[in-house]
Image (cartoon, rainbow, N blue to C red):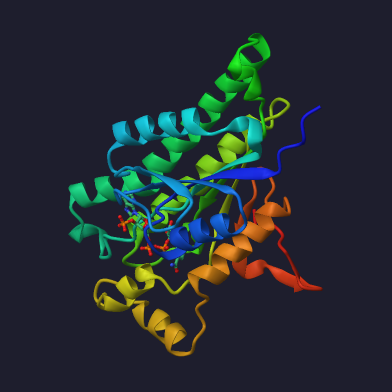
Length: 276
Ligand SMILES: NC(=O)c1ccc[n+]([C@@H]2O[C@H](COP(=O)([O-])OP(=O)(O)OC[C@H]3O[C@@H](n4cnc5c(N)ncnc54)[C@H](OP(=O)(O)O)[C@@H]3O)[C@@H](O)[C@H]2O)c1
């Protein structure tokens, strides 16, 4: 009998910087397999395969996911995890000042692309599992491993902010897609576990963009300026480590919407309860 595979394979989007880059570095540091989807032709985190893709282009999104699912060595994987991390904040401003093209680009990146990646991930891995039970060829090696999807959402999904209407709406949609798809997956045995995680306010380029905006477009701006001045923003590395620890410990449950600010430390180990 062969040894039980111990490695997890992570597919992570938006890994050029911020939380996504830290997640990618964390996955590699833990010795797991990493497949990144980013706009960069090459990737900075060593030990991974990068698949170049602009998430505004849904044909590219679909093609890239198909390639990744062909390339994963399932026989050596215990877990297969998709982390939909990539996101954008722009356009910042009142709704009447936002152009249709800006809304469209935003919703493609923050809603359509992660939804399509979820759909392809579920569909293609289901297909592989079916072929594995029906054929004696090499696909039989691709026995289904535990499958999870983690969608990086935001507290803005449930708290409205003037100036962030498209961002708040997009993250609210991502939460609801998470919850609906999770219900679907709970209908039968061996479904994909799907949850969403709000990282809190994290010191990344996205926050720099908020501080660079003006109060007329985003009246709550000074709150974020103050948080940074008071050192109340965790780094991407801290947030990524917490996500990977909680995920590795199986704490993100199917259908749960989590906020990392709820995590508590007990004897050096983090614990979290879902918000919804
Ligand atoms: N930072 C926070 O305080 C905070 C709070 C709540 C939620 N979040 C969420 O956390 C996630 C990561 O945010 P972050 O703060 O790390 O943001 P960030 O530093 O601005 O990084 C965003 C990432 O998304 C990628 N991306 C954006 N548009 C893309 C496109 N069209 N195609 C491919 N990749 C694209 C960027 O790639 P490029 O380099 O190619 O642009 C980059 O890698 C996002 O979903 C965000 O909404 C962040």
